[in-house]
Image: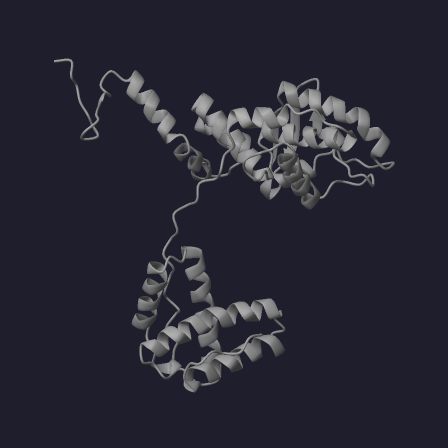
Length: 316
């Protein structure tokens, strides 16, 4: 752990004791201790600049000012929440050591961060990546996984847990076990079915006896989450993708492309296995410009005044 920088001893002393308490009594890892120390040193430095020389003099109002400062400096709501969590725990220690009379961070909440929109791959780029010809049995497997993930919007864990008997090629369906142990039946596209059929011809030579997993490694065992992620990233690099490929990118792309084509939010919710439609609604923002163009071109009263951004009826 790094040394405490130059702040008044009245502030740095208890902080050093707290970090030692986390390391020796609570058995936290050095990485965790460093994280606590880094966040609390930032607070201590700010307090020092404001003229504070003792932790017990810090009030709820002072910490709210500090949160506002962090927000102005560009920290996300999640990062500020982490700072507040460290501060609350530190004051619990100070209370135990009788170095403070209350915990001024108790009822302070971090500002909410704007929800980050998932990145989505372009339809044409995905087609180009998935139309590539595999060179060996492992690449046949990889292409099959990626086709199936994009075809049915599978989560990484759902793909990895698939067994041979969960896929119905004749019916064009796959049965997955989602979050909370909820099972759902999903359609499988024509290209994904063809990819599965091709992979099954190679799987028999790789899988160990009695292995039920649909996707197996070179050792014949169920393929791990980490291996799937690594193979997808490698596939994207080898085929010149302009962004890093990862399982969630395929799932997000499936959701966005389905919603853009159908406009049926409820159906996409069911396909993704979202318990709350609010989770699915994030995809409605991805295609707003596309929807706005359709609206402008289609609605009889939607012609927009390009100077004022307002709708106008110029037919009179």
